[in-house]
Image 1 (cartoon, protein in one colour):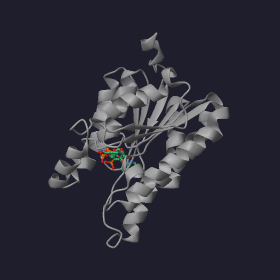
Image 2 (image 1 turned 135 degrees about the horizontal axis):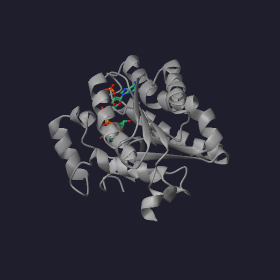
Image 3 (image 1 turned 90 degrees about the horizontal axis):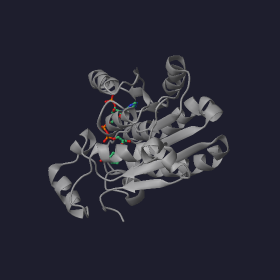
Image 4 (image 1 turned 30 degrees about the vertical axis):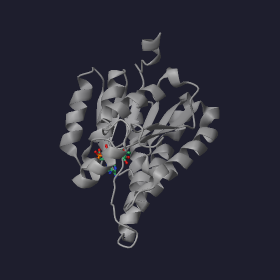
Length: 251
Ligand code: NAP
């Protein structure tokens, strides 16, 4: 029965920022669970193509769509693409994100705005893009927040604001969309080994590791497993939550 509950065969999932890091792991985990994937990314053509081939090894269909999800019009294109390639959508994973770290004094408006558009406006844009087809059949929306949205962090007022914003958006959508049988949840990872973590200087990484109860960074796969769970019928009564996965960094 457990296996059956986690089976996503026949489902269609959009994963934003699916070409690298956590998004790549989410694409592969959803595909392994049986879902077909619309993989969005903004620049990394080669990486997206590689993930497409990895998804296809699970016998699943994968369509890659290059689009800046921070741009409203481009994000609407994802909704159109999913309908033309798959004829439906069951799952939206808002994962795409960037950081442009500076203290407030040094941060330009452009650095503030780029992160707000990419990390937070994208969640609005992509949810709008799929809301009509999703409402017809019911489904699942998962957005990737961050431990930083709850803790704050030096040099990340832009990033922290977006990740806290995702939690407010998630709770509101959970209330608005429950009647359409759409469950809406967020995941707030701690520090995970990806290119993004690579932008943090090594001495600070060592310091952060000491603050994590389990003494190590997370893996993208450890986040992806929870995405599969939240998409599955095993999580059928879970909506409006933010699942913290951080090795005991923030308890
Ligand atoms: P990553 O390795 O840097 O990958 C980011 C992904 O987002 C890439 O696929 C990238 O595609 C895509 N992307 C960036 N800007 C985009 C845009 N405007 N439109 C569409 N796609 C875009 O990052 P990650 O560490 O896997 O992070 C994934 C998510 O988890 C982010 O929301 C991040 O904030 C969150 N998170 C990460 C950590 C961590 O420690 N790594 C912790 C907490 C939360 P291109 O290469 O094509 O631009």
